[in-house]
Image 1: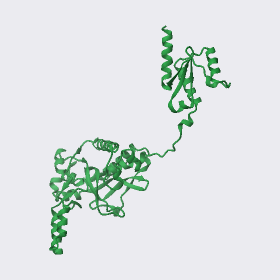
Image 2: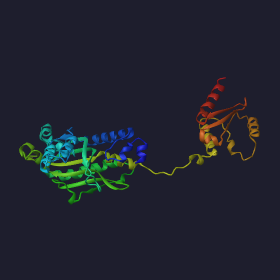
Image 3: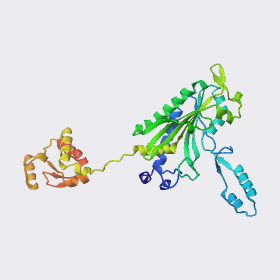
Image 4: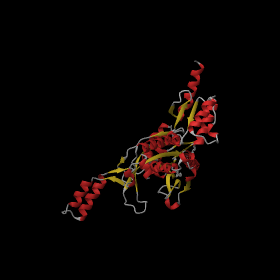
Length: 377
């Protein structure tokens, strides 16, 4: 995590809070994940994007915005009895705005409008990506507080007779999608939700998991919701909810696909991390290897070259220059230990005996220009 902060993926304060804050690189990575998710989900016909409000006044929402000053004033009024204080607090809670904990309800509310768009034909889906507030009550040593996450959601409406097939289809598609961009695909897996973990109104659930160093965590969940929540949202108005399934009119079953984008991003960061032993490459690259590389490069460019590095005779530098001058070698390249660090070497001109310092990447072009100029002289 410290490495992610040092490399501008997450902000340092992310170590101390569940609120996800990102640096420039993290923001870019999150944007890419969202774009890829949207592209994969909406590649199917009849999947439409929607935008719903973060706030709602639905009483069943568990997270609410409460004015702390007003609450403190009520608690500080010593003249109030316990019952009166309780009533005032309940009124304050009732009048406060709820914050959504998932994107599912917003999609269910827009079902009827979308139904007209598709001419009451199944299947179709509504997708959205937005901020939600999750409770940390499911974590050990939790404080009961909520934290902000970016959630991606697909709510798929289908025929009751094909809902099981669609459930398996979306679960498989989502697992394949997570693995598609992974360096280690085997760290992503899938499992069924245990019966005791099933939420109200759900008949089946499948989780996409990632194996973090501290254990597996859920990235995405596919829920089979039947028609219970849809009927509840629209107060049992079956006629308005019905659509065509062949010759029959049915209330569709709902499949919910929801992912925690922030946790998914963290999974990709961990999956991309490779702990490699740092090696001193300078020690591995010997002077001889540099000479061999230059020799091969010159031969391929048509430059006649003498492999002086193969000489086994121990001669002084002055004697070597005399030897190569007598052989008619125009330029002598001297590779030293400093060349391995800087890439610079000495080039001696036979005719002028001047030594120039030149970068190894410039040598071939220098020699070719010299040869070309000599031919045109």
